[in-house]
Length: 234
Image (tube, rainbow, N blue to C red; front, side, top):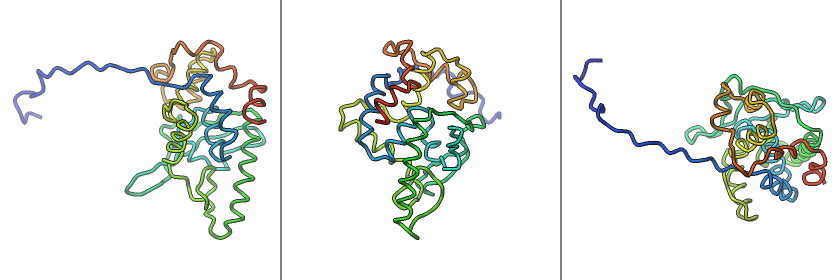
């Protein structure tokens, strides 16, 4: 703009940025987590089982409404997010990008556990009576009010501490989901679409880890019905 004659930052030497490998859960970690979730409250069991098998973002999970769940065709659609700001509290927003609005098909076993959860939530609404806030959300507080975004994170941290599991945050499930699929041989465009990325390079550059602990067949358990029966739906 010609306000100053020279750039005061011209001779500044920027330090090199050293990228660190994102810590993610391996297939063995995931299998153990799913087994341990069997004895946890159904709401949290559903939340983390669905997150593991979908790669959905936390805000997308909390923004899910029952009208987004198609039990007849076994599909779940992402249409909105639920976020939190200190100034305004919990609020509903659009998805991160247009491509983040997507529909994924799930195994029958996932839908069955969702049906159990829907029945439990309906019973809770009856018990609350006129105190129940009906907003159609899947994940809510005791009175139907939208769940606070920090609840899944803090609960999973305590879960990991109780069970001597390394805590990598809940966004790591998204990284694991992508990495397992890529190592299984699923093409990068399909994985990118499942994650809701606007460009494929985001998937390949950030989410596709080459951790030596993830062998080529590591993602097979995601779609193995016998695995479901043994660990999640017994």
